[in-house]
Length: 276
Picture 1 (tube, rainbow, N blue to C red):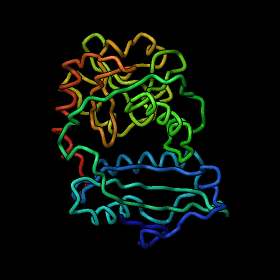
Picture 2 (picture 1 turned 90 degrees about the vertical axis):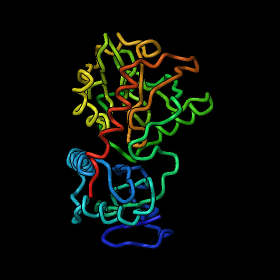
Picture 3 (picture 1 turned 45 degrees about the vertical axis):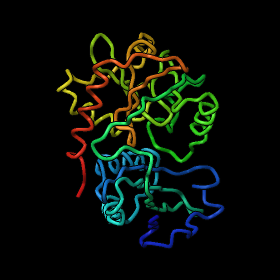
């Protein structure tokens, strides 16, 4: 593992968060997670841009370090690893100052660059609703307990991922992934007004999706028209790419051809978004 905090690399077991830091005591922090392939970061600039938007929106003081440059320097430590997980964390200290940590470790469970997950996902629809009006909606906050509880609930039911309901019906996102589905022979993904995270991988797929007839945004109020058990569904995320769903609530579902084509397109184009 590699650890960098507030301007320097540190031994892996260094304690960097104080016991009274609000970042620990109340989860007053932000994070981003990036995939690194043999030392090269996937979509670094898009992840850092989203983090910076959250810094501004949630009133964090800017840090003095160039986050993108620090990520690149840390990533070079994983040149011999096929896939690594790079996490950037910002949090408030006891004096309301902003701390920055970047950690890196091997990620053995993710597909290799340009590869597709070989096993389709098993998802379940949880009883919870994403609230678009929550001030943390749309941001990767370290106040993550609700998501952890949902995943724990799903694990007891043999789900790989738990889907969250939208305020006006339907489902709007997974606990750790965006959604992609087929409706009237077109690919759609829930729009940001549903309360979902503006996912980096989702946005890249939307940008390159013209080859598939486009990937369209569906407004929150229209999601109630989608039955994910019959429409064809995929999870979209950093270490998933486009991950077809084969079971919903432990019942098998058909994977549509458009979903398979989206998987292939994204895997083929991943190299285009690597940072040197």
